[in-house]
Length: 493
Image (spheres, helix red, strand yellow):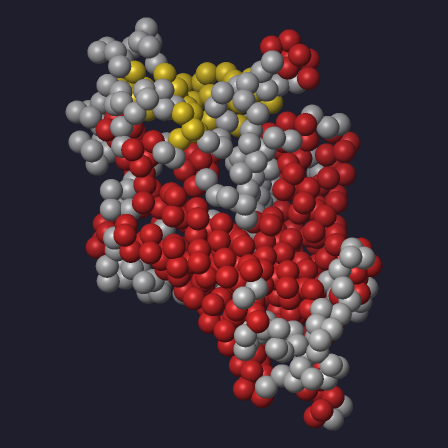
């Protein structure tokens, strides 16, 4: 292969549709991420948040992790960062920077990456989810896809497929090495019911026959342990593999709420879909995305080729650690090996919870907080509460408080942030109350609050016909006894 042939191989002109999906899709998910932070960060981590960032910076610093808030944090600065992120991501979704030279979308995506990394690196437990680093890595990688003035760079498309491989294969290996329920094919007997935040179709999925659930597990193993290898196969096998990934992720979207985890997997999987395959499935898509451009007129500038190859080399070198982790008996799940959160390792649900325990928060205005008091329940937006309520579809939006409420029974209810949350309820803090679906005291402070544990399960079809309840809940015990402002261990004392 001579130099001209080698340089032409570095272009991937048959992946223009994939580039459009990758750039606009990843930018759209950044928009959702910044919107989620704008709406929730001040209440959770702001100056008067449950885990205030100023206290975190003073006590622990950022442990070498890059963030714009290293020297100063304020809620106003946080909102400015989110506003800039929303504006830049909206422009990318509209495709405007892509109309210019390739350095323009590069700067736009790297700006999103740096801005959101600044938030994640001070987000503490509220930002300790695998899809945070996944979004950061995706934003950095697609930054090098160029613009409409250049052909899609083949090495970057391969690296995006490599990201999908690590996401899927890593999750598959975690399951095989994890709970026995994945090996004996019973995991889906429980998962739809016990997952962190069920969706409107989760109950119907849970009530499907058990043989179907065993097929679900087999299909999951095939999609995560076999299919990812074919993302690097010749066409049309690569497109078919991407189609399987997209289909399985859409099933997860339909049956649960996993923030943008499934949506970003869908978007990234398009890196293996050729224009011909996309046109075959969706005939209204054009085969020629730039009919005004004559063949061969889009010549990749040498300086841009050097940049994309340098980025390729960096990401290939950083791949050593996640490759070693994939084949380690002590495989890490959702871990980064560098402070820039690039080329990470991923995986989820190595074990499946068999029972669903929910923490229910109640308040009362009565003087004596015994069982005869008028206890009123706070309602959350996403997590189960009212047994008659149909769970809502929130993904790709991320309800961070609701997600951490799911983790409480699995760890301990005696978390610092949870006591701070109870204190804010006693203060009737407006920022915190806006995170809830329903405040039983209409903005007023209760005299006492407490936390109780309940066992939740989906109602059978017969139970639903008889009672109209979608959940059956059984009281277990009092997790945290009644607290008042004078008796609260939170920061509001």
